[in-house]
Image (cartoon, rainbow, N blue to C red; front, side, top):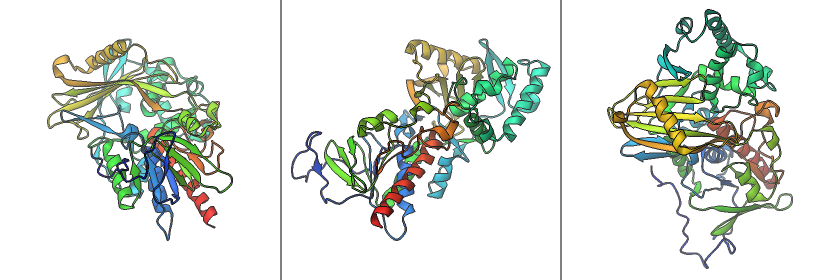
Length: 455
């Protein structure tokens, strides 16, 4: 992982020292066309869109982050194994993949294990192939339930998600037998990383299931750091400034078309528009002092507990719990994330929005025990990487809130020249796809403001 594209935030040539209470102005005194606060997927998507959306001139763009670029898309190397921040998969036809293709950011990788899987119910593992024929023979369901499950899958494939908006997953699945609903709930958890069937919008759930069933997902060679590095390459070639280790303290607006000021620990910058693309709604409210409208239409932050097992020998393992929010998948060798001959298995326990993650020792033991179902023992493990409480999304769309379209929009702060992007913003996609789509929308809104001021 290289920071070769990142501008160091130390400024030895400044006329006077700066502090949070005494920032110095930017050295050239110019106003940026756009400042992006946050260099995760949402921030990178914002900057990529902005740099190519203006014709006839090159916009002046600054990206700020208190941490290394990438956010939750960063990848950590440990003894030759590459660990994402929890299990990550790129939806091949999602908004993020579309954005990468549009800007020439190339990624490679492979598909998750297919075919044989282990379904776990009541603590017992049941080998099962992932095919309609296998579902017609599984002992996990009665003959009548098997037919209902196949009918449900057919319904999902031809459903129009917009017609399900406003209904919770529980309400949508209520007519089906309990054990059939378990299969559906499991697939929704795996595709959305959200375990909230009582409030999660069925339209959003089905939209995500169709992405998963259709073109499917891809595990990435080199981890999601490959996305980050590719985006930074494009931004560097376009002359975009990316400053990490520079924490934003405040974002303040003027009246009408007045520039927006962004104060960091070292200086104050001004811009025609600012996109806050890091953290969740609490970050936007803290930086601006304003209130984000529409938060009652999304859930509290969704979190998960994750465990990566670096294996001495590759295992194409796949396991799902039907009556518990647990999942396991071999990310290597499907993607190049392990040394030759080695493997990398990721496990996850999904939490209900706002739920406490529980005792770390209990959670870790639970995930290790789940790995037993695919035959992974202590002697197979080279090392572990455990994340007790990983933020999956800063808010999931609810049925009562109107689904995806009900999430806060880019202008939800109601401040002139200040826009939002993130996995909880806008009417399109979930997870990283929501971050990418909202980044595109925020950039377009910001540049419209720039054009109106210039005009």
